Length: 155
Image (cartoon, rainbow, N blue to C red; front, side, top):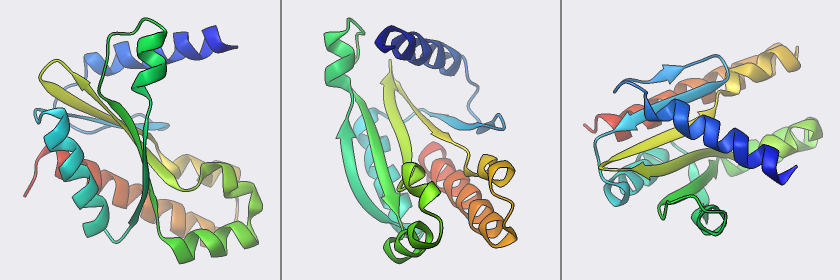
């Protein structure tokens, strides 16, 4: 199981290595490549999350496990964020959404660039037929694209 995760992560990393400098929306993932250094991109990301009206929940280091597994990276984080009241309301009415909340963006360094990757919340529309949830998923999609574009091309 651990080997499958590592292989999947490596495949994702290799895919992202060849991304052009624009937002890529695959139907399941949203990815951008920024020419900003990792620390600069991280600061812009956190600011963009707040500017978009979300609260930064936490930043989790992932690089420790990767380096222990032999992957040469020291700059890999997952940034968790959300709107507290919205998360509480949604998880009360739809507890099946709990595993997907708060929202998250993976950010990692690659040479002199920084890449950002997240699951596209629009995919949840296929799983949950409630039109009110579709509005939420669509808004999350739009907000995440805006957040990631600000990291890619800051104002």
